[in-house]
Amino acid sequence: MSGSCCGRPIATIIKVGDFEAGITGLEAALQNVHSSGIEDEEQIKSELLRWVKEFGNYISPGTEDKYKEALLREYKKYAAKIEREAKQD
Image 1 (tube, rainbow, N blue to C red):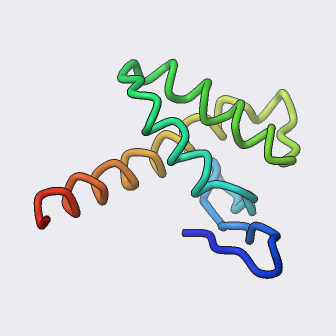
Image 2: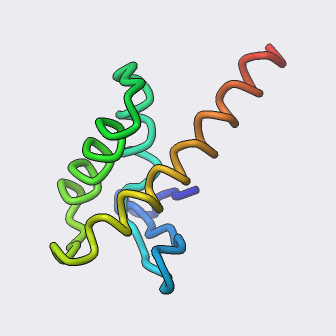
């Protein structure tokens, strides 16, 4: 998803509603929420949004719900990937 160069996270482009947005630190946000063990989707969305903002991404209040849905979609992909990798080990 995202990597880093020279200590700086690289933005990952995701589809948010009808536009694309670059999210810095998305991989770290996904990892942090996944490792927290939260299972409630509303809580997952809120935590993802909190982490993404903490990593310096500006999200206007009017688009937060669209971002939450997009972040949850990315989270589900991430969690499925982790589960597949765990089964292969």
